[in-house]
Length: 556
Image (cartoon, rainbow, N blue to C red):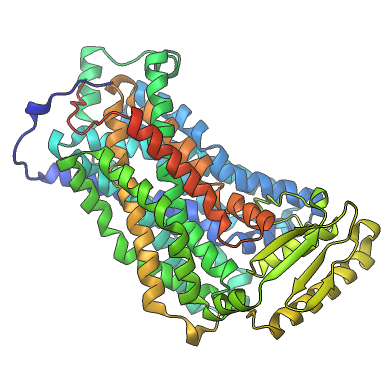
């Protein structure tokens, strides 16, 4: 860990033109990388239709799982690989390479022939491009954050690196805008056939601009000094994680800061959108627009909290964000239901739904790629239908081997005994059950979709903006803190791994984990227990063991 030099900080410092170029070039390039990364998630259904539809169901599931996992699971491996290179040969050249890999692989996705043209080679190539994207993103963030921090004056590291922290949100925002603009210019059929490729293809222009800008930069002064003095690490991985003193700090950074930051970040931006669209049944364009407005309101607070962390420290702001999230997620998401789909809130109050089933015959419905139909047992059929309909339900236990039932008001509907059915008979039985259950839900006031005229849009945007502000509290200061935790000779490697394990694994799998919890427990809000528990654990570990870093001198 670096030494503390509390009295060495200059009182006043205005950013020079060179420092502004460093911040702008590093941030702009990272925005484009996040833009590239988010396109796949936003357009996954169109991609699946072109690349996975021609294979059998099992093979399609494997390919879809591989493509999904590549985006999140491999990020820590990219952090290790590129972090090592960054500590060996320099920050600037490393994140030039990661940017080129990300931009070119994204561009290629826009041009890849589908299954109809080249067969099984299409999904294989798609998975390969996703692997490259995940690896590149794993190397990009640590390089950009380290590079900016090592150019910043000691008393403005939080402010300067906060611009890097805006990039993930701005990348998401940019991807939504480009997709929405493309949709507006094309018919739905045109967009489904070829228009979905446009956002991928135009990324080549973004790549060219950002590479040109970044090539104007010099190497980080901290790394250049180490290189000139011959003090760079010869084995960054071994030094960062093979020595307990450094490895302990990396583990503490993960559990005492990044894990909580990650779940708050994904809840405030991704799970909120998932909840609006999939649970509350708000039409997709409307949900994206509401999220975009909330992002527009909340994004400046990344800079505010980065600046504030230079004044009062990183730790109190990050811990406060985790605490507020853990304490208020349940009431905020309840308010979101009332504001976005008041008919659903009213129906849940006056006509509760109960699933009677044998618990031993119910699966844990963790399905990261949305390919599992959960139709092999009656309990799974009942729970999956209600969860996807955005309906909360209570569970009652039946005798072992009993067929599941749904009680909706005074109506009792028996789920099909799919364990005894197969092929078309199973499909027909499930369809008949879903039709009957949907009619019963309609009869007691459960809406099939949110009524756009009843959405309290100002309140929805206000709630979403508050969730984004929580994101800015935990995320705005985190780059400066991670940089300050580790010595410069192994900084790129050491900070990148906990960041990408936290955000790639703890955060990346949040939506599917939360949905599985909802399906298992029946309550549409219970998925929030996942981020609440992780944020609370980070709060406890961070408060007890995480050191304050904002006065650290990072030039060593």
